[in-house]
Image (cartoon, rainbow, N blue to C red):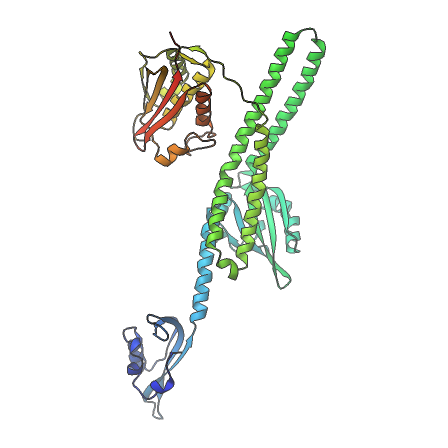
Length: 484
């Protein structure tokens, strides 16, 4: 216990034999027992004892008991000490692993929990608070019936019984969200087997509402497209002699297909953002809990559940993305375009937004040449940049946007400058990427600037940004000028 032979301790004064105990409160306790005659006990008391190496500590349960003679006088003190260092350190390691597991699972946008055979929650992560408006700690001990309500419980009761019978399950259902409405979910149940007996089950619930609604909308568009095809077949049969009318009908079909491709494109983006976050967190979780996985059987089980969910979501995204690859790129047709007229047209379109935000717009287009570009695409470029300059305004000052132009080396250079939020170097590097949303307080798909860059470059131009956080951004576009 003390790391020293008994012969070195027997017969010597207590603190002479164990000088390392001085200054740790032991003498005060001994004096108190001797003076009061009352025994003193402590649990898991940390004591510094250099038994095997300098600075070593141990944890002990001990009792100091006064020793009395036949007349009841205190003649000494007996001490019974039990070394519980291994138990304390093991418990602390488990507690640390549990804290890490709770921290990581709290960061995931999925519901992760554990229920015992009585269908009572014994573990929940932070996502439960967003769903049920209750703190995770308040959910512990409640039954799943009490948490989700009678209607939802009836829908999943059969799955619960199968999980408690030892069956691993993946299924889709509906779940109440803050008691206001139902959301679609994808759920996994994994039985907890111990010594051949099911003592409970792990549950992971992912919100698939956006995916389900997107799938339903795609189905509706397919039905609409099928109806359109039937109409086209009838029109083609009636108007075989008219190539011009047939061409117009085919153009309608092409536009319908383009709308469908665009929808699938946006839908796949809405699925990718949360999956990217989950993959990063899952990697961090795996690295941090490598040691805990060897001692806590719950850790690898939960990690496996999360990995399976990520793979299923990723497959869904890949399928949607494959659809968009079928769309052929359009060749941009250039024409002489009056940039000043385009800017004025966009300004009028955005007048309500400019007025609502009290934005100030300064124009300096006196030296603006005619550009060789697609008028439709140029309008889209200017509209996107000007509306972004107002949308991503700084909350502490009136938005101010300056648009100016000049001619340089055969190009028309257009600059759109704002005093908005600004971007750091990392954000600038990501700015023109597909599905990049750098500010979450404004709704959007994250493909606007990607399309701007694509249109500019397809038309033979270039675009870049100069920005400083808290000051603002300047987008600089170079477009081919018309040689006069």
